[in-house]
Length: 248
Image 1 (cartoon, rainbow, N blue to C red):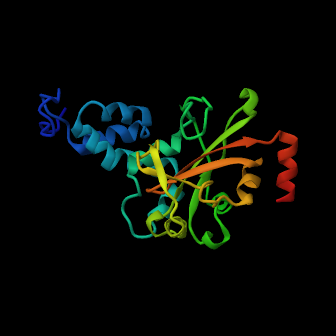
Image 2 (cartoon, one colour; image 1 turned 90 degrees about the horizontal axis):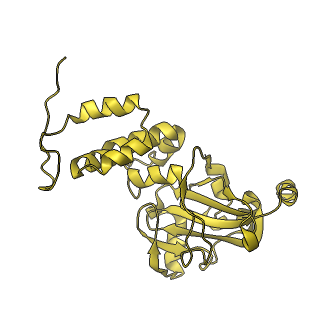
Image 3 (cartoon, rainbow, N blue to C red; image 1 turned 45 degrees about the vertical axis):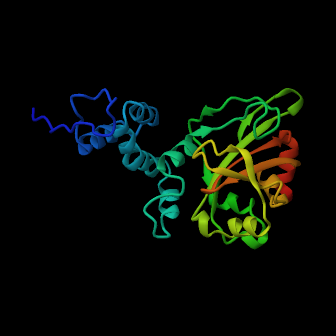
């Protein structure tokens, strides 16, 4: 068996990897065989700065391309070889429902964040979350992650999404034109960037609640500086939401 040359970690004097690292090519092939397992990528990132850098540059990118190939091609079609907020943030957004904490973004609701096995993101659905003058923007939005029977709060749905080329989007331009302030304390759970409250900005169209199957006055979402979106809604009972879909 031929052993690949190892490279000593030079990123941190406290790194435990005193015997060096395998080459990036070998690690790439190992994780390719593991089908870019996100939990293993996260575990590898915690081992030292060298692995963390490799995961950010390579492994999370391959995970995203494997998990949502058409969406990734579209997000990169503007000519950029990276994604706003970095690949690790996007990888987390694909598989993690952020939930909410008491005193957090969504008032006093306490629902822990969790990993989701599979989520569908739709560019068509994203149009429903944009004002008419902003519908040339590209926004991918997930189906709501349902948390049923939350006491007085009813059936809660969390949704998340990402804009393509957010820095050049009409939504961002309109937020700046209206002078909407960024949230003073809370940040995006995916990339740690500051957030705009779209409810405060009065930029939530009625079509968003129709798309989610939620009460019109019980929907709120935020968009961060990197174009990640996270939101919450109170879902209609199944029979009522079916009627809404027919009207839409």
